[in-house]
Each structure stands twice: as structure tokens, then as C-alpha cells.
Amino acid sequence: MNIRNRLTVRFIFIVAVILVLGSMLIYIFSADYREEDFYNRLRNKANNTAKILIDVDEIDATLLQKLEKDNPVSLPNEKIIIYDFKNQILFSTDQTQDIYIDQNLLDRIRLEDEVRYQENDYEILGFLFKSRYDRFTVVAAATDVYGFNKLKNLRTILLTVFAISIVIVSIAGWLFAGKALEPISGVISQVDEISITSLNLRVDEGNGKDEIAKLAQTFNNMLLRLETSFKAQRNFIANASHELRTPLTSITGQLEVTLLNTRSNEDYRKVLYSVLDDIKNLNMLSNRLLLLAQTSSEDRNRKMVPLRIDDLIWQVRDDLLASNPSYQINIDLDYDLDDERMLVNGDEQLMKSALSNIMENGCKYSSNHLINILIKSSRFGLIIIFNDSGIGISEKDLPYIFEPFYRGSNTQNVKGSGIGLSIVKPILRLHGATIQVNSKESIGTTFIVSFPRPDGVY
Image (cartoon, rainbow, N blue to C red; front, side):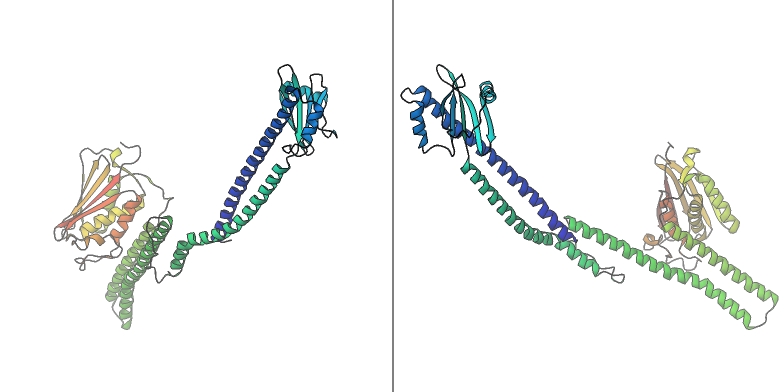
């Protein structure tokens, strides 16, 4: 069952329940009113009859019976019986004795002053009539033919109104549900038109305020993320293919040229060293691509442990100097640092990769291969400042330096792949850290990395 049908059925059900409850209340109140009104009329009639019999000396029981026989205001099947204190009948219109009255009933009436009950089709009222000299027990009975006919007519009206209302509500509910779902149908139609080749399309957001507009905004935000993701994926594949093809082409070309002629051992050694260098670059590129893929995914199960940031920086420094003896890396610690302030929560291998890329970039793009590192604390956590006097980053390139495979316009003469800084930012983000860049072309670059204070460290 589709949503429109479900909404229609629920709408009909709700209205039906309301109509049934309303009709029941109307019928119950009407029935209560009929009963109360009938007993009041029955009491008034019986009370007037008793008053005439007892208080008017000129009228006796025989005369009163004749008067009551043709009384036009008598109730249908009216029976009035009057007893004295000895339970002797003073007056009765129940000639056929249709009403059964016993000693217990008379005692009960005298005890409770008024008793109401039903017997067959009769509704019976018993009450005490008090005169100036004595008390009399009056029992009156009648059938409320007109009242029950009115209730029957009311039932018919209520059932007819209910049936007609359900038909009208069914049609109205179907139209209402269709109108209510019309914006959703529009959204569905627009979404159906969007494919992998048309992710640039967007869903109409309408007035931008109601729930349908919020749904459309959610779709559009999802489409924007998908479009961005697909573009990034395409760019990544294209750039990765290009970067991988360069060393592979170099290796293939060198080997093909070498195999054209017989060469000396020294020539073969030169070619092998060159190929080995290309393979090392290819291996390093593959590792960075793998690391970039790892940092691009959210791993909620990644284990974070307390790490001493100064130890990590010294280890990275030693590794860089071992592979690049020409690099110069100076490390300074703020005077108020202690062991606890040096702690950050993180993944050791990822942290080393991020620190290594920042430090290597500073050395690689500086003519003196020098980078200065300052570690200091703040009330919010730990701050690491990386400062170099290299070629700097132009203002137009600055917003894009953390994009994969992006290289500044002034770095063409320096060997690189444009992956290093693109790894740094997601790694720092995984650790809750932030990075800021200040740079001027031909003057130098400063990276400022801020780590939050680990829980429990003050």
C-alpha cells in the first residue's frame, strides 16, 4: 500500500472514530434526556392524580377513574396505583394488573422516597405523596412510545449521516492526501532525472521553510557531497595515474634504450642505479597514495594513545637527516613545558607521517634546507610552529595547498608529487588538531599546528 492510500485510510479511520464517538455521545445524552423527561412527566401526572384524590373532597376514586379514563393528557398505557399506610389500594387504573407490586417494593419506596425501574415495556416510578394528614405510596407506570420512536429516528439519522460522511471523507481524504503528497511526488520526479552523469542538477526547494523544502535541501546537500566526491575521485584517479605513469615510463624507456646495444658494466650500473632511484620514488609515491586513501576514510575504531610530541619530532628529525644529510632541522622547546603538556592523543605512525611531510617540505623548498621548529603550550593545548625561509607560497596558491596533487606555480623546478600536504590536514583532523599557514613568496612559510589538551591534563 502506497503512502497516499495509507494516509487516506488513516484519515478515514480517524474521522470514523470521531464520528462514532460523537454519535454515541449524542445518542447517550438523548437517551438520558428522554428517560429523565419521561419520569418527570410520569411523576407530575401521578402527583396531580394523587392530589386530586386526596385533597379534593368532592372527588372519590370512582369519579377519578372515570375522569382518568378519557383524560387526553394521559401517558400511553398509563397505570397509577395509590396505597395508604396499611398498603390498601385507594386508587388504581391498572384494571388488568399488568404491574406487579409486592410488600418489599412498597417498603423500599417508603425507605428511599423514590424508586425507578423497568418491567417489560413499562417504566415504573414509585414515590411518597405527603398530604396534610398522612403519607401515601404512589406507583405510576407507562410506556414512552413517542420517546423511543424519537430515539429510533435519531439512530437512523446518525447511521445515515455516518455512512454519507464516510463516503465524503473517503473522497476528500484521497484528494487531500494527493494534494499533500504532490510536492513529494515532484521531488521524486526530479530525483529520478538525476544520474551519475548529471549530479550537477538540484531539486527545487520550494519556499525553503516547510518539511518538503527541508527534504529537498537534504537531497541537494547529499547531491553536492556526491558530486564533490565523484569529482575528487576522478581527479584522484587521473592524477594518480599520471604520477605513477611518469616513473614507470622512465623505467621502461631506460631499460629499452639499454637493451638496444651491448654496453659496459659501468653503463649497466648507471642504468640500474637510475632505475632503482625511479623505483624508490615509485614506492614512496605508492605509500603516500595508500596513506592518503587511509586518511580520507573515517576509521572509528582507530586506536588513539597518549604520545609525547617532542619524542615524535626528534624521531622524525633523525629519520629525515639520515636520508637527507643536507637538511637542517632546529628544535626549540618553550621554557614552561613539562611532561604532561607534551602529551597528545594520537596514532603514532600517522602523526609521524604528518610531521615528516611538514618538516620535509620546509627543508626541500628552502635554499639552505633549514627549518626551525618551536614547541610551546597554551591554555587550550599544545602548539607547534614550523618556520622556514624558502620560496614561499603565492597568494593565489595558498587556498589549494592541501588539495591532493596540487603544486604551487613556483615549485616546478623542485621534484615532488603534491601529495605530502594533502595527507597532513586529514591526519591532523583525525587527531582533533588544526593547521594554519602564513606565507609570503620568496620570504618563507610558517605552519602552525594546534593540538587540543588531552582529557585529564591541566
